[in-house]
Structures are given as structure tokens and as C-alpha cells.
Image (cartoon, rainbow, N blue to C red):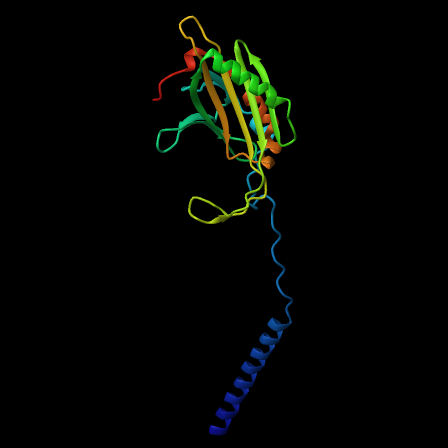
Length: 231
């Protein structure tokens, strides 16, 4: 009887072992599972990069420039903001490639004699225009508008950001300043001077955005009611 039981146990062990070997062999022979196809409907896409067309398509508004009696027609996302100290005022908003900042300022007035001397110097300066330096003069109603552009050399010393990290500068700074000279009126004997000065602009950004920026500057008009106290 003991021999029969032993034979039965050996028989069950052999059958179980064979089944295990067969299962292992079947798993080992299966090809690697094919990765599921990626559906284009479920892949997250990056937002489209803003282009000149995108910015130009934004609705425009007439924006008073507050400390100067000027109004600019700008995209609806633009505004006039103060810096943290409240001492400087900027016309600013998104451009085709990055933020655009224009410092707004009222400069000391000039006497008629001083203005005549300034005009003579500007005329001489405009006769020496070059690729790196340009002065142009135009009129805006009764105002005289003088635009200066300068391409500076790349800095020869390290440049650091706000937190002290070294910044690699690959494009020369592009200086663009627009001065508005308002002639004397009956109650005012001096010539008022208002200034728009681009901040942080370089040649690469200017070349990419010059049509957009030119539209902003060309939209500026004189409006005495725009000269308002800061909020």
C-alpha cells in the first residue's frame, strides 16, 4: 500500500512539474508586447509661439501716457505702469517676441533761444548719420519730433541679472529715443520737452519687431488732456 501511494505522489509531481515547464516555455517564447500606438488626439501640444500677426490682430485702444500730453494707440493688453519705487513710468506690453518697455518722461523746458541752439545741433548731428547712429526730424502738428537710434558695442565686461547670474549678451544694445518739442503758447514762454525711450532693446529684437514698434510710435499724437496726475 505504501508503494502505491509513493507511486501516485511521484506521478502527480511529474505532471505538475511538466505543466510548470510548459508554462514557463510558453511565456519565454512569446514575443515582446507591441507598445500601444500614440494617438495624436491625446498628445499635449505646446502653445503656439506669439508672432507679429498675433500681436497685430489684437484689438487696439487709445491710451493716455499720463505724465506727458501724448496718446498712443496700442494693443489692448498694454498699459502705463510705475516701477516699484514709483519714480519712473513705462508704457509697456507684450511684443511679438518679448516684453516691450518704453520709459516716459517730461524733461526740463527750453527757452526759445535754447531750442534754436538745440535745433542747430540736431541738424548737424543728422548730417553725420551712419548705420550705427541715426537722427531724424519730423513734425507732428505744431510739435517737432526728433528720433535717435544708436547701436552700441557688445559689453566687454561681464553682465549680471537681478540675482547675480552671469548673462551672455549676443546682440548689441539698440538705443531708440523719441523727443517731442512742444512750441511756446500764449501762456507759456518755454518749449516743453517730452521723451519716449525704449528700455532693454537690442538689435535682434528690433529687427524682429520693428514693423510692430514703428506702428506704436507713429500712432502717438498730442493731446493736452492726456497729461494727468499719477493715480
